[in-house]
Amino acid sequence: MIEKSTAQNIQLEYGRYILMWLALVALSALSIALSSFVRGDIQIIAVIAAAVIQAAILLVVFMGLRLKDAIVRFFIGFILLYLIFNTVLFFLTPAAA
Amino acid sequence: MNGTEQTNPISLPSERPGVLMWVFLFTELLLFGILFTDFAKEKYYHYAGFSAAAEELNLILAALSTFILLTASLTTALAYNAVREKRNDIAFFLLAVSVLLTLFFAVNRIVEYGQLTDMGLVSGTEEMVKRSEGENIFFNLYYWLNIAHFLHAAAGIVILSIAAWLIRRSAEKTNAARLLMNTGLYVHTVTIIWLFIFPLCYIIG
Figure 1 (cartoon, chains in turn blue, cyan):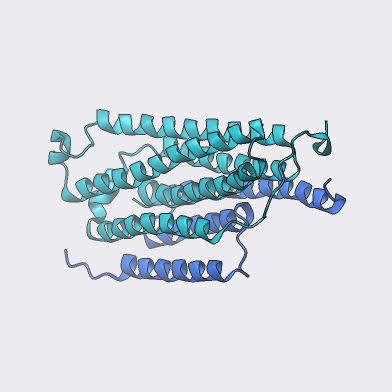
Figure 2: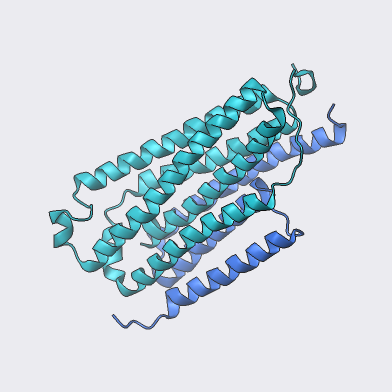
């Protein structure tokens, strides 16, 4: 039998999932809108930032990722370093071609 | 009938996925990460070609794909919650919706690839010979990224279907519950990867 408090928590999670899904859809709509109004580096930064926020929502809310786990901290650290590397590569590579 | 009156409830052995599952998902992200890096580098060197090529893509179909995958992620997450409440019938229904949505996503992708093929925008065609080097590189990377993701989505359809079937039968109860937890993680990972493909190819490109 499910404990009452656990059942209430699960009910709350249904609402939280739907709310987060609305946020994800809104962020996608924002990205598309930005493609019409903004150009250049600002557009790239804004659109990538929207994608990173969406990924974070999915990881934390939908996938239940918890920072307390050492393995998760390791993976997040690695991914952050990778993102920084990618950003540097994207913006600062000398145009040799 | 409420959740506690269900017959054959599925009990969750653990609320935490195993380390191996995270390692597997990490390798998936790493695989696509390498392709994203290559895309970013080539876009820098072939800015004009990438911009011209991206104009050929169908933003509406891609936006629809994004909406479909986000909704499939939602229904999968809700299905996992339903299993935790021991509402197996609702979980099965939500998983069936996830399967249908992912199938719709796959059809949507095939329609877009068909449009591009009709336009001759496939490697080796006369149309591509006429195009600039940047446009050729863009479409090569576009197909690598999108077909790799399409195959992952197709695998997701199979995994979701197996999870739905196991929950419907309530056979191998413990395994079905764990499978649903891991299925959810896989589906969400496929969605996360698409959330980066979409802006890279269709908006920034």
